[in-house]
Image (cartoon, rainbow, N blue to C red; front, top):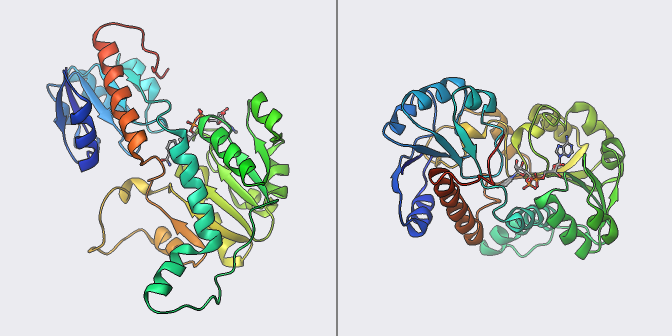
Amino acid sequence: MRITFFSTQSYDKAWFEVNNQIHDLHFVDVPLSEETVILAKGSGAVCAFVNDKLNEAVMGALAEMGVKLIAMCCAGYNNVNLQAAKQYGLTVVRVPAYSPHAVAEHTLALILTLNRKTHKAYNRVREGNFSLERLMGFDLYQKTVGVVGTGKIGAVFCRIMLGLGCKVMAYDIHQDEELIKMGVIYTDLPELLQKSDIISLHCPLNEATHYLINAESLMLMKKGSMLINTGRGGLIDTKAVVKSLKSGHLGYLGLDVYEQEDKLFFRDFSEFVIQDELILRLMSFPNVLVTAHQAFFTEEAMTEIAQTTLENVNAFEQGMELKNKVD
Ligand code: NAD
């Protein structure tokens, strides 16, 4: 089958080509949108990623061109209008789990970097500055970590933090018995926010979780606490978070995802004037660390993404059961 890949990066092309044997792969580097959807002409399937726009207009255009399958190369599908897909007879598949470890470990990297300021120490030492002034962190041991969403990624993250000797509290609409046996304490969201020193978000973005962290929920959090978001940008009201950072209430912020990331992430703007005032404000804080949606980005995860996506396409083409179908 001919497959058009949108938002292609060099590493996507490399990983998919190495894992492909039978399909005709077409790579375009622009994101999928109403303006670019025409590039899918002649393909039976399109592959899309986290910031591609899969709205009703795009679905209609894809169906009209004869595209039958949308293969998401990621787990989240908040950017896919599933109702429109159904309306136009398009099947949507995804990669439900590529490496929960990749994201959970990156979450820990954000926490440790913010806490122990290794990014600052690296630069200081290279400039001959061996002072420890303003580099003091805190022990993670015995701190309370609040995990929102204990699915595949959240569960791995809970285990990592238990291993570091933290107390782990969790909030999820479904409780994981295995985690309870290991010592995770489930509670409601307000109590989790009130008691945690570090809060990490691992739930999907949907109507119920949009702006889960807002002005009110920030006020419930302990003064000086750390907020980490490797889930989706829309889980956080970024303007409210900026206010809380300015007032000194929120102590640290680590983001791998950002509300307006579709206009920035996965591209190089180093020689351009960035127009997004909010991200510029965020990056001006000494206690904020932003990575550009790289939590998933390990060799193991890329292999799994390429193999599962191609298996999804094979299964669809051969009329087999689609275990990774999104309904
Ligand atoms: P998952 O489906 O295994 O787990 C999600 C968990 O969230 C489930 O346990 C679910 O019950 C819970 N949940 C759903 N609605 C909730 C609500 N309203 N309140 C609290 N909990 C709720 O998904 P996963 O594989 O663990 O991934 C979690 C999220 O991480 C994805 O949806 C995606 O947005 C994000 N993600 C980010 C990256 C990255 O590179 N930054 C990579 C992969 C996934």
